[in-house]
Image (cartoon, rainbow, N blue to C red; front, side, top):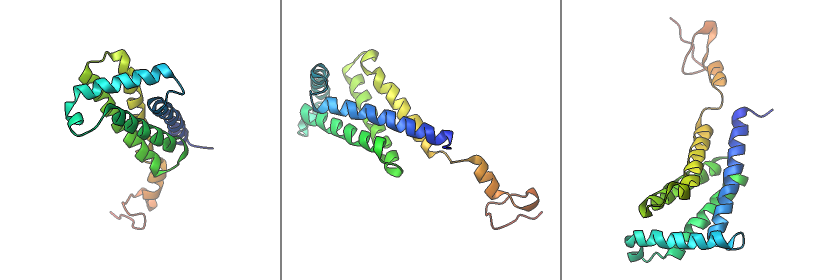
Amino acid sequence: MASPRTVTIVSLSVALGLFFVFMGTIKLSPRLSKDAYSEMKRAYKSYLKALPGLKKLGITSVLLRKTIGSLELACGIVLTLVPGRPRDVANFVLLLLVLIVLFFHQLVGDPLKRYAHALVFGILLTCRLLVSRQPEEELHDKKSTHGQNGATSHDPKKIKVS
């Protein structure tokens, strides 16, 4: 039977991955929702107006929206389907994207209801990353460090004698 830690990581990975696949697709194409796509286009235009330095670098609102949408889509797919270390990398990239989007929302003065979902999913990404990075089992570690007569050592091959 799978450990609760494994179930938690897989559940969060699939749920978060699907959410970011959905959000990335909305940023890239009007096929899922024309209204949401139009809203994304408008929002990214306002972000670019608030950051004139990006415009000086030659970054357009379309390029910014498509870059963030593509990264969300790709990382969402990795988070959903690819096991192991790539999941953690995708999680970290998505967490950085969420922080950037939260910065944009704050920059243009959006109300909380416009970016509450980003806060929630940022917290969930942080939780998933923390759970995935914690040690597998403390009991397993304790068993491997105990020597004979209850003595403990840092190296399982050595026995501490007092």
